[in-house]
Image (tube, rainbow, N blue to C red; front, side, top):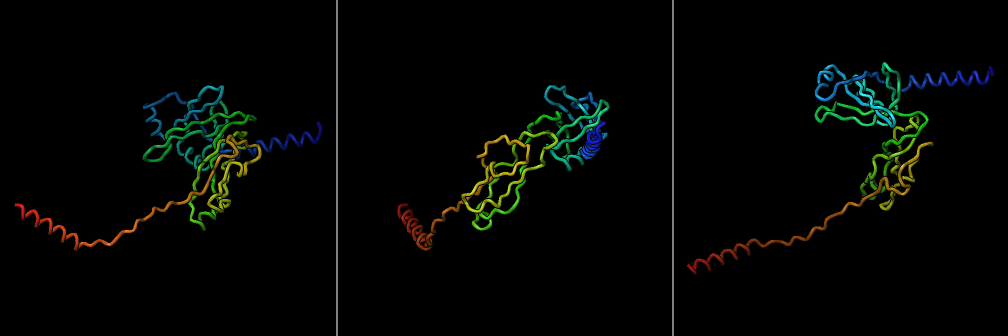
Length: 234
């Protein structure tokens, strides 16, 4: 065997092992109960999830709620994670999480099954950094028109966020568009380059009308005169 090929194969194997271990993973089990019947399972610390993808049957699963909460806090949405089941391992991204309106704990999650080597569409959050001179010096108001942007990217290259440097907003007329963002290589933005991401608004000051001095003594005199006129007619 060619030594170069042997070393290359060994390098790829080590890289794959590192990649698998580095990826955050959840252990899941199949579930066949739904609706109100989930109450007992929730009491045992299990959380229902569904995994789906193009051309694949939906998989209804349970994960351990506390494990999911920990992973979700670390990874968030649009991050590839591994799922271990008795039928094997697969990769997903956390597509959507339903939270309890009072406790804020997750009730249910949607997992999107990914296909390796094929780009997928995901929404990437925008992280605003820097200071806008137009806000600090000119009294403008920063308006964040977008909070996330849809992109197409390979599952393993999904960026956790895209930075928006608002220090470019130096005057009240400045705007930041999609074209101004630094997009990671291999990531295709699904938006027009001219779409506005952030801008500066000018605070409108209501005109205050002059309030003339009120002569209360004149008002009292007028009321007294009217009263006397009424009494004279009685």
